[in-house]
Length: 147
Image (cartoon, rainbow, N blue to C red; front, top):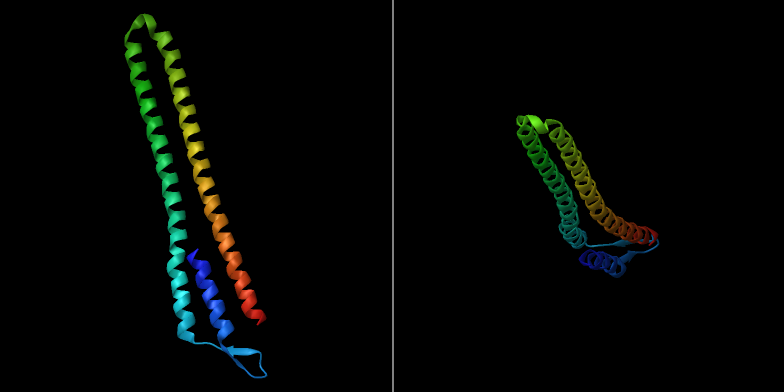
């Protein structure tokens, strides 16, 4: 991973830097460290973009599920209206329409839940990756502070 290489580069810079006698401190080239940090910043947005994509994908899936549910419900309503026009089967039509609406709502709910679970899994993966990256950064900072 590029970020780990960059963190290793910072560590090398710190290890190779001149030490200040009797102080336990070192002198580093500010610009060199800042350049590496800027590279790290340029790499981080990929992870953030991935999280944004997951959020947008979740929204798209939920919107698609809602649209499908609306279509099914609209079709059910049209079907009900047609059945009501026929006097002899009005009662059967009402029962069938209720079943269709219930099925459409159930399908929409299942699709929404599936979309949410999918998005949650993707977000969980990105979160895990970011936590691992933060852990590495914290460890490296701790190593820097112990020097």
